[in-house]
Length: 422
Image 1 (cartoon, helix red, strand yellow):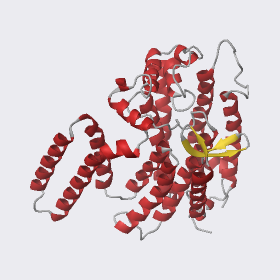
Image 2 (image 1 turned 90 degrees about the vertical axis):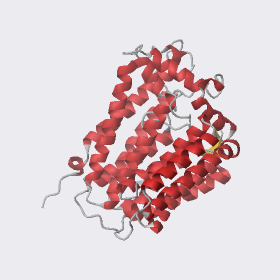
Image 3 (image 1 turned 45 degrees about the horizontal axis):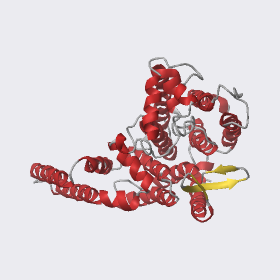
Image 4 (image 1 turned 45 degrees about the vertical axis):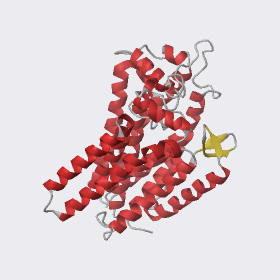
């Protein structure tokens, strides 16, 4: 039977969306640092746009390398890949290079790489490998515990490096766990704890605890004859109560001063308008000033005068909002939404459990980055310093997302073949 060439099996829709996002990101990095007085070229390698172009060419080499590997490589070496990056994260704690308050970089010549960015896809591989077993069900506490341990290990190591934002991204791997049958109560309780944490900053703890007690008693009354549900209700109430009581400890003893200010600025942007609140305030001004169709490419006044810090990285969305307006912002949202929906479609058509779980891991990580990054720029989420996928300036981010995505596209290209381990 004749085998179709790999080029006919690759999902070119995803590849096209990837290419559009990368090129649009490159153009907007140029726009974000453009100085009309200097009028530097987009191909000037001394600028961020020029360096990003170098990393884009390197990305092409990465894509061809991934397609060169046998598709069984990712499954067979999942634990080894995970172990390598755990060792790298441990090494960073000892000999890492500190950048912007985070000791999460390793210097290579004149460049720096951030292993925690690459640890995301390594963790997604390890999780998929572990759950790709007929006897391991996420309704089983042992299986659930090991799965969470796989996620928590790199997450804790990243927190110890001082990079809380990147550490939070690992939470996105709950998406494939939920798809594979994790009880819905766990993510519900997690979201409830987050909501209660934010409410505690707005409402008196006494009032909040009284409300939790009332809701718990009502729920227990409605489920008095169902012991299992009663256990869930009581456990959830204890966890949420603990979350309320621990808010002060987290704010004062866990978060660093600048992180405390970012959280408090989310509740009250005027608490530190020239400090923690400056980025978000200027970001919203830039986006709002773009109006319906924007000011035009390279015409952003907020951008030209450097009002928004980190505009080529964490706040790159501001450039879209100011120079391309509501239309450009909606187009960018549409591109990311289309890519995510396409990846969900690809994940669901996998014959291999490993490929499906990994595919949903890709969806979860990209979705988290996309939603949180844009929410940061418009003041709906604390500034935690995570890039917009394929769009923000940075070699580590671009390469890590490329490996994350194209490893899955490689698996999808062989979806009709039985995934046998080496």
